[in-house]
Amino acid sequence: MTSSPTADVWEVMSTARSIRRFTDEPVDDATLERCLEAATWAPSGANAQAWRFVVLRSPEARAVAARAAAESLAVIEPVYGMTRPAPDDHSRRARVNRATYELHDRAGELTSVLFTQFRYETASELLLGGSIYPAMQNFLLAARALGLGACLTSWASYGGEVLLREALGIPEGWMLAGHVVLGWPRGHHGPVRRRPLSEVVFRDRWDPTHDDVAVRRP
Ligand SMILES: Cc1cc2nc3c(=O)[nH]c(=O)nc-3n(C[C@H](O)[C@H](O)[C@H](O)COP(=O)(O)O)c2cc1C
Image 1 (cartoon, rainbow, N blue to C red):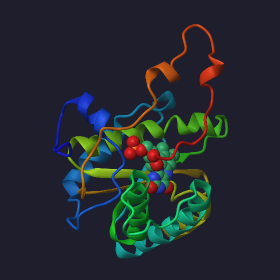
Image 2: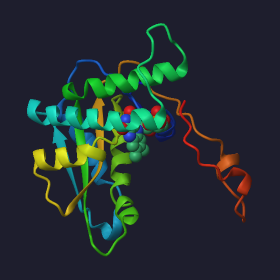
Image 3: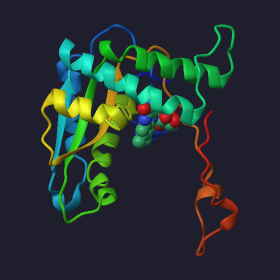
Image 4: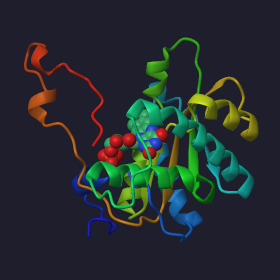
């Protein structure tokens, strides 16, 4: 069982795959706080730490997350050609899609954390992202180490951005970078599925035989 807590950093990194199905057991404050503290250990440009993490726990806040999740699902369904799988479809794709639908359908029941980053006018959005995504990754790895499941989502993008910003009172100067859902996993972690090094590492020169970037759905 690979969902057991572990302090082995290699095991954590190689098995921290997205978890989208959760038990009904709530995530206690102390456990959540450990993940949030790990997020604050991440690097950021000039060590500005211009991040704020909004924990969505109340029924009202979770209801907004549910609406944002529905908006996001409506956008990603056609992009990935996703449909609700037939009950007798046990293919890998059907299993992933089923879990994705469950995550979005149950959004209103789950704990989630919205990661925001102050928008410095001097930096590009990509550079600003570089100051918040490491915090999110630390949070995801800490969750994995503790045996929690988590999934980074785009709920704070698309139509969800306005919904979340208004409902949670997030000022204009702050960017909504990502929305992470977490809970105790139903199912288990890893191993992650990734392209081999031979396809993504080039030696001394760009390799055009491996510069395709088509989205690969499982
Ligand atoms: C920027 C970003 C946005 C994502 N948005 C969603 C999302 O809206 N819904 C979802 O179910 N998964 C989302 N994911 C999770 C990815 O689908 C997942 O990380 C990827 O397929 C690799 O699978 P793994 O994490 O299980 O290894 C997102 C991941 C990233 C990095």
